[in-house]
Length: 309
Ligand SMILES: [Zn+2]
Image 1 (cartoon, rainbow, N blue to C red):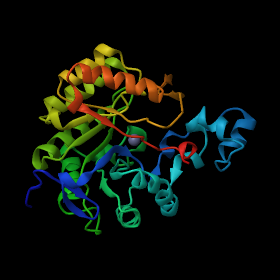
Image 2 (tube, rainbow, N blue to C red):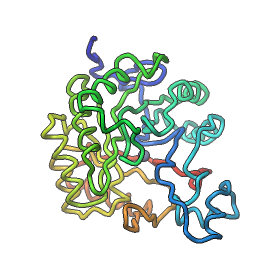
Image 3 (cartoon, rainbow, N blue to C red):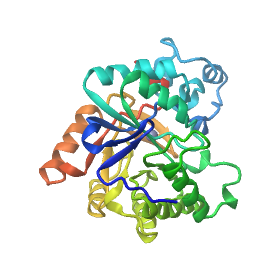
């Protein structure tokens, strides 16, 4: 199996392109997605009724304040809707979106290729596994090497029999606690990254100590941290000194909640107090002032129907 010979190039669902051709890039999106692993059946009877309604103007506020409590909100596989949502990005000068839905999240190579053709946007597809709640039933039986082999196949040969190749490892999910299987996946990702040189995106554990543990697991497994992005810096309430240590480890910071207007999310036993867009810009401006301009990525990470136009 030949290695990736992609220096300066990017692998999209329609083939490889020059890095120069990426244009304005949103580095963490979900074009088609299944986040039902996060669904929690509400206890209250009237809430339970709302949990099974489609997302509408009438229940929009209720869902925005508890995005994991409505099933329709967590599932989007309609290509026409994806095209409608992405078209304004293209019209505003957008060039590329990086699709982070991977195994267990309704990853759909052929669907993404159709959306790319219809919108004219480059789409880079993900690989690997999200958080433990979305892992397949046989995850306990897989080794890190098995996971690495799966990812390398996605990157070099394509997903299933589609011939459509992933272009990034991610988003790789880490929970609180950081589970054994998630550690194993990270080790597999590091092996796959060494074999292919592919970039790697991490959905970190929502905890100041554990996010650094996520990075340590990658480093000790031989990952190239200069090609690793840590997602959700604007939503996971890390302390400034923790964010600085992520930068000092060599990773990219990803501010990926732009435009969502969802400020408080119950998640991992906490209530996340997410930055506003102005807060995101202020935080980014401070890192730029410290010389980190080239280490910042931005995106919208639309993974709930309640944030769609
Ligand atoms: Zn995401």
